[in-house]
Image (cartoon, rainbow, N blue to C red; front, top):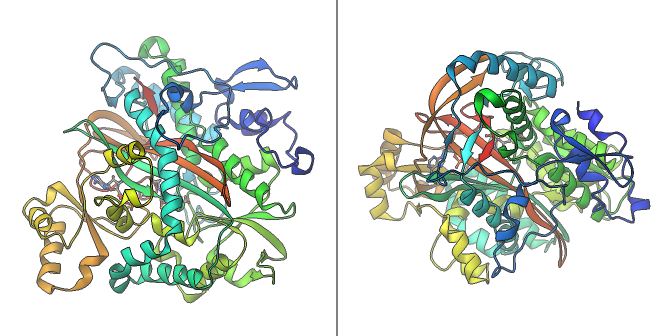
Length: 566
Ligand code: ADP
Ligand code: HGS
């Protein structure tokens, strides 16, 4: 199905396109959503080739872009758009719940969905298969998914879209303030060896006065709806290895497919499922950055883990990059980069003789990715090179929980953003965030641990501390009087509205009460003063049992889902 979408598009060749990857007649249409061969409406295009109509999320919000903000989206691939019909009905504009499945239809829908997943590459490696994380096509399982989408109020959707370019720009501006990063994480550095190693590389780059002319950020801001206040609150801002961008596109097409085939029984309009342009826009951002690097023989280096059961999620992006733009990617672990990588005198990073234009990290966000000094040498080699880092070490540090907490402090956003309404809009989505130096908050957390989340400076899911464990940890830290407190932040626990849903994993389904976390991917590309891309680039909706504390699909807690706009 993937390939059929890409013919008759000729492979993009920068020389005859004069480095204008923005000829979307060519690119974005083809891969609007690689999963969607079935659901496309075709119209004759300029070049007589098939013209693909996909739903661009931004078409929904275009009218509402903030007039006062100077940070407007730059460059959204103008995919042929048909605004999804928001199924609003009286009084449910804030309805935020799983769409109901008639019990008699469940088995049939589940079987159809499982078949669709295997036929459309909505798959992951099976953890019970020894080679599933090493060899593509071996030991596959369908990705975990919610059976039907979640009804999602347009007002939250639009708010999150408007925030995307603001957070992109904020990450960039904070990343330029090396002193802010070093000072804010100075105490954490003393008690958290992983963060210390990252900070050491960052301070080395500051000493070398190493400037990154071309900057590429592929981020994701995660939100939950706070059931108590109806507010959209930010859970965290990811600046490294943001994943599920490939598979997220698949689940929105799966849902559209199921609803289209059962429109009469479900009484739902498939076009209310918001199309996901994550694959197209991540590939376009990487291709545009590659063109800015301006070395035709250069490759995109994807930094991967030695065992990666989530490789298919990554391949959706890199195959789209090759198919749509003719850009080659190579996959290497940190250890392989250390062994095979080299720096030319002009700073070019070379892997087995091939120059590297972009280093796209899909690993390197967790201590487990640095089992020896070799991996740290590789990270330093990459940072010292002229390759575009996605992310750079500075961007990586901006995504730490401690920086998230510091930015939520009074008058700190004002240091980075100069438009008052942008500052208010960003601050509006901040949940309660505190350091452990705040005795009043620590007391409340010991008293009511269920209302808080204790977070170390870790990424990837499964690291946070909740409930009794949270209370005991705070009591221990206080008793020890150690400065280990600097390794954590405290966050207000957000309780999203729960609703029943069918969740499908490993070929079986359960019905459970669920809550969801909604993420908007962001793409930011600039070359010195020129901002080339500053935009949202697709979404991720993850649904988990309401009884679970932790989240994350890779971490095994959550299920992929899609948005049914209401
Ligand atoms: P990580 O970087 O490890 O993914 P997160 O901060 O995203 O860390 O937390 C992981 C998961 O924990 C989230 O996906 C969410 O399910 C849950 N979580 C995190 N913070 C909160 C919060 N403030 N309220 C409710 N749940 C939370
Ligand atoms: C990859 N192995 C993330 N990324 O985005 N998690 C989820 O695929 O590249 O699992 O819920 C890596 C975090 C959202 C998807 C996995 C941010 C990864 O876990 C990378 S750090």
